[in-house]
Length: 213
Image 1 (cartoon, helix red, strand yellow):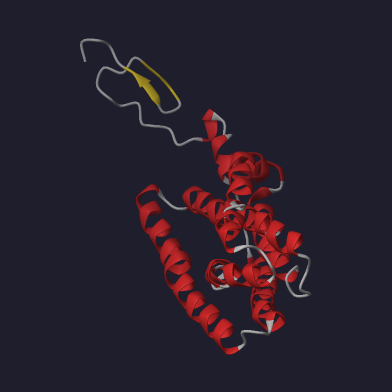
Image 2 (spheres, rainbow, N blue to C red):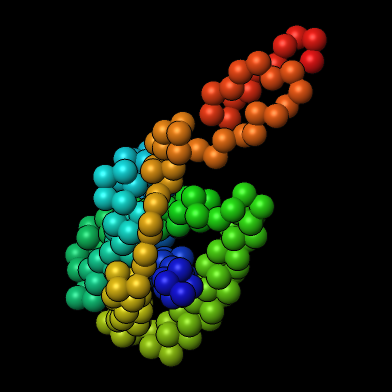
């Protein structure tokens, strides 16, 4: 639910921001460069993702991603200076790294091995699929209906992300994280039955057998 709601707002970045930045005085030739600024903090977020999951947990990491998008849109409500409007694109990368990738990591840590592909597929359908589709329709309608009302155009994603943040913080439960699983001791891992023919020793899931089988 939260992922679907948040991804209703991300098309605003791709569909509305180019024309918005150009209307604020950014030369058209520089618009593509400004739109790619978010890639750098996204790379940084991915690099620090394991540390964040271990330090503030899954819930905190995902919340940082939602907050990044919320602050990004909030900063546009008051028609800020062009430098802030462009620089705010850095927060988009933080949102992708922490929420999107962090959500995928969380799904992998919670889903059974045979269900991981299905869980990731459902996540993509709800976010990049249905969420982005409806979000693009909403962004196009808002920009087309209110071309000169930036406050209203960016207020809608602010309200949506704010509501999703409250809903997420109130309802999300994470009993264990990927980091917890990765750091589990050998004794906590499911043991493979040592009834294999010829087994001479075993540690955790690792079984040794004689060379003659």
